[in-house]
Length: 300
Image (tube, rainbow, N blue to C red; front, side, top):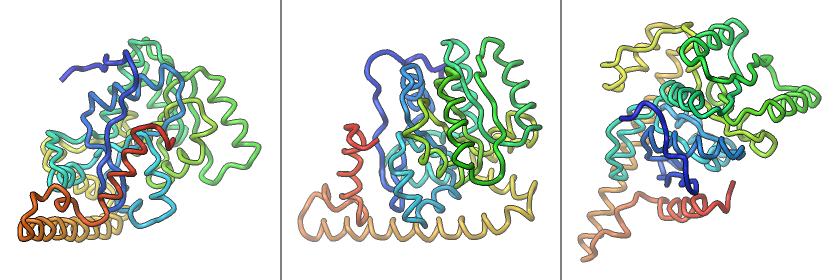
């Protein structure tokens, strides 16, 4: 796999999406996601990309308001291994690996450094931002960090909101990394997509990882889908309820969708069909038509 993303010529090809529990997720590789994001960033397009773990997926699936917002994002990458597995099992995506938000951010910064695209950092504490900025500049000396903000832990006032939009739009940045945590960062990105002339990339805990504030899980745990367990061991009081609830809901939803898919396939076989229309779980025919609308750029 290439270490930089260099496929940036020609029209932008946004990845197709597939339905997972009512959420449009992109069965995409890091290379392809990176290429589309950088192409949009070079032309200062207003787009949103988010990295979805199991927690993010279940949060969005359980909220009609949030689902409507995230389903308008340009890309939702499968951050968690279980999300990748679900895409492979339900849609035959054949993805060999997931796309961790932290890895996507690092790759984008590496390519932005090589191509002159400015980045903007939004989220985290002042301490985290300071450490993150220092590490990025040390790793990529040519990277242009156009701005870095640690916002207050509350909703911005109208004047604060207007001032933030002005700072970002006049900074010259093409990429804006959002590290506010799920689902706050997704609400934020959706609310500002029509005002910020950047590609917003929601990366969750990547600020902490790249700033050296939190350790990342060993590679074998990441590949085995056990990164959540590693993080639970680091922050049990904060994360135990999240993982107990969201992991359980994810498993139940996945089993239900797999059962519906198998039932539909059997019915198609009994009717003498080839399964071309019945192999999708219930509700995904509409999702396919909706995805076609997204891909044609009719919904932004």
